[in-house]
Length: 163
Ligand code: RP5
Image: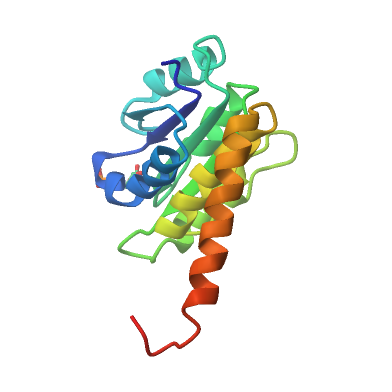
């Protein structure tokens, strides 16, 4: 099946975070591609990946990186596809470095930046699904069901002392 979302990350060490992106896309049955593409260690691969992504049929790119996190911005510089950036929580600065280096894109090249860590990774996948759902009625229904299930689970468990 054609992968619609490309999930790339700077290092294998980002996978425990970026797994959350895969989790929601698995749940919503959106086909995706996963690959390590490093802005620093494999810069030529990064440029080629971004330049050919639209022709390969991807509709959204999610880039997760930590530290001096150039990956989402560099991807965005070489593709017209929407790029969602996930700041991976770094050891030295807890992800503030990742967040600031992804979010502060100069005017003219856009990156949609999510929260630091697994919440951001999950929401990047969710947002990609929401973008795709504009042109996919079945996916839109699965999204509505996911949201209804989430709401119901909170309503069914109002006591904070319960598991
Ligand atoms: C970034 O450097 C990666 O995205 C990762 O978050 C961070 C550390 O990478 P490793 O040294 O663990 O490979 O490029």
